[in-house]
Length: 102
Image: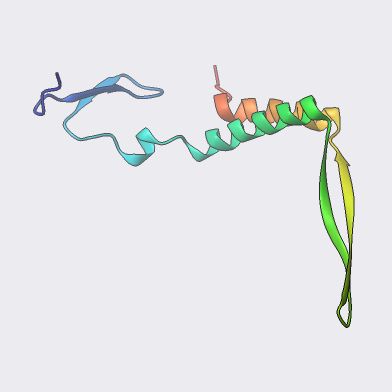
């Protein structure tokens, strides 16, 4: 069981194990926004490599002539280059895991 008076022990990312009487702060509990962006880039890059393209429908023209209404919908396809998917994965990995100096 958890004792309410016991100090909280947690390991910081680049530091020693510390003990504190306070609960973790918001930045310690939530994912860093840079890491979140990196994760999103890795996922989007993987989807770009897996599917290669995506399609969407665009409304281009509407014509209203009395009680008659006409509309034209065009289906657009966007091809995702392989280099863009690979670049997104590499950049996302660098953002997520970080570049560490030795």
